[in-house]
Structure formats: C-alpha cells, structure tokens
Image (cartoon, rainbow, N blue to C red):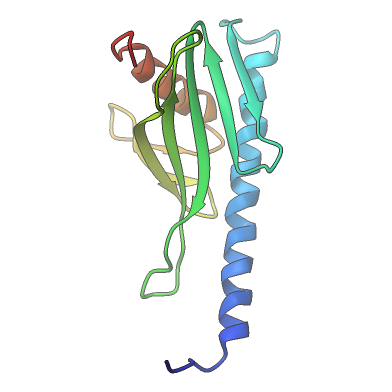
Length: 146
C-alpha cells in the first residue's frame, strides 16, 4: 500500500465540507418545524430529528419516512455534495422492512437536484416543506403492506 502525501490535510478538507453540508441539513430540519407551527394548514405531520442530528423521521397519519444525511464522494474537481436518502419505514402498526423512496443531492448553498413541474430547482431551505410533503405523498401512494 502506498500512502498519499498530505492525508491529514485531505481529511481536514473533507471535514470542512461535511461541516458546511451538515449546517445546510440542520437548517433544513429546522425549517421543517413549520409543520408544528400554527401557520401550517396541515396539523398531522410530526417531524422528529434524530439525536445524532444526521436524520429525521416524519410521520403523517400511519405513514412514516426517514430522511438521512450522507456525504457524497468527492468529485474530481474537489467538490462534494450532501445526499439525503429517503426511506419509507413500516407503517404504524405494521411489520416490515424499510424501503427506499428516493434521494436527492444538495450543495453547501442549498441548491438541490429536485425540480418543480415548471423546471424551477428546489432550494433545500426555501422549499423544505414542499420537499418533505412530496416524499410523504409518495409514501402514501405505496401499497398498504409497505
């Protein structure tokens, strides 16, 4: 095995990227507290951040989804994106395994690879409620045994 030069510096750069992306994910989770506010027209969405700060669970009626933050591999240009993996958890009162609903990537500025029907790009924090609602609606459409 050969060691690359400056391994500590590489780790420091990865840590710095992780921290910037994690800050964006934390803002996203904070913005989802809108569902707990009096301004929210839907009263039945419960968003529960995980203790480790790397995921959240959202529950609506009997549907539960989990959104987990991950760091994407570093690109050849040296950039890194965050990734949110979304899984549907077994419905309340049902047995089963989680199933992946989808995922999206985001930059440190919050730009995502999610598009609205009119082709406008969704921004992680400005559109947090729409992003979560879209995945909840997708999970609701899954067969009841899921």
